[in-house]
Amino acid sequence: RIVELAGTVLNMPIALVSLVDRDRQWFLARHGLEARQTPREMAFCAHAIAGDEVLVVPDARADARFANNPLVLEDTHIRFYAGATLRSPDGHNLGTLCVVDRQPRQLTPPQLEQLRLLAELVTRELELKRQSQTCPVTGLANRNTFFRLGEQERQQARRSGQPLALINFDI
Image 1: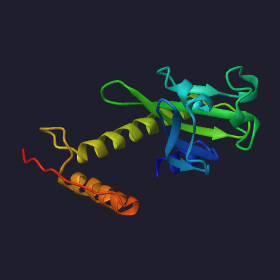
Image 2: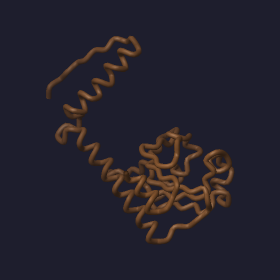
Image 3: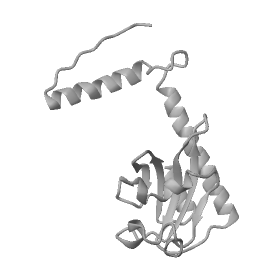
Image 4: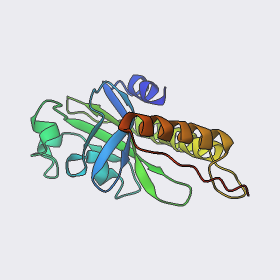
């Protein structure tokens, strides 16, 4: 819902919640883009998480960092990018809420503020989800999360024909 809202409010055809790891960026939520991930070396968001401010690229073809990027030159044809950093409560930059257009453009200061506020909502949602899945005392997976993950592992073992064992410690 937040990426759809960001796209609508900022009049952008593409909006993404992008998480960046060592090798790739993957899209936790996407609006207007079919891809589910890209290599980190192509990721605009990898540049955005290096700083604390919203990264704005008005025209990617005119920006030396991105002019030769396959996302600019090939199918996606990114021209405009703005990404607001998603920062964990312990201060780690995890990814961005970003908006993308295939036309060069600018955002007004009020639009930049809207993007920052929407990124704060994404961060809050991620933290609430994390908290809802763990025990506040031990930090371990709570009962619901344990059973959900256990079921995923059981299904994976069944598909692969591998044996599965469970050891349960009650704290």
